[in-house]
Image (cartoon, rainbow, N blue to C red):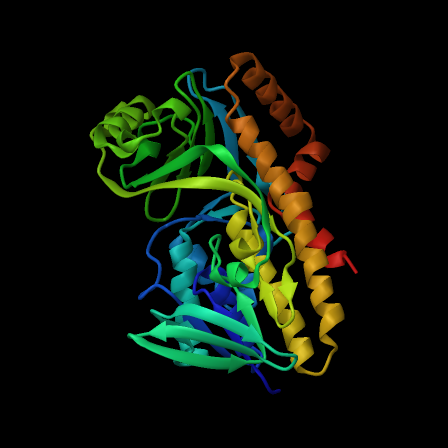
Length: 397
């Protein structure tokens, strides 16, 4: 098999793609702009199809050991304790992983880099910033700076896994249509044992309250708490310790003042690239599509992109015709992004941020009705675990 694949971006998507290709005997080079592995928690939810795919690379058991499985999750009214509890064990016949794994994405980066270094030592170049890209009918050429020097690298194919602000997508002039949600999201992490002081907590919790909604997730390292501050309070004070501590004290007074080990403010988007491929270059993950984080679909969709795309590139490098396979990649993963990931995450986002108490109560009763009906409960879980999404996308011709 001839031909190098250049991957721009050393996050979860790029590293998984590199490892999958290296295991298939393909030469790979990963260009990562950061000077070291990303240490921010960022995404923290792994769904069943992603765990099954990562298991083929020998990564899943390592992630399970580093994270925390959540076989149940809930929408819950803070003041009353009234809840709709979803039980993943109902679909244990559909997957080997009937739970949401709560594990920071930097753990996937860590185990993927370790595996890649064993498979292809030196494949990852940190501190490499792409400055130019060109392609012919036969190859791709990438120019980048590293250690103050300009270098060039030729390859047969290029995967752009360089995130929402993708330099590759921008340089190719590919549109990224969509919108930005008006509210920002803010997430903090604490090692305080909230589960010892709050009744009825599960591993994943979406709370409604009179003082605003929030999500609360327990990983192997910490409790992560995330919320959207009121629109009229978005200014430099939003990250002040007083504001953050006051919010957390309302949630659980026992921990105040909280020792915070992470804090991150970010914008949420719903966007899709005009095309996922251009010549010998393909987009994957956030470079191709963005969605609300509610439900934990973004990283999962990106990793599933990586497996789909690299499988097709291996076929191409073994002699298959490129155009029909890359067109199918676009059809399959664009459908998954738009019809399933964006649609479901947007519904989850809007439901969780509903301000009208009467409408929140109506939403809760609807969710409780789903959990009371075994068939509807199973269908809901299959959608929200991305199992249906993955199966539908793989079936697209």
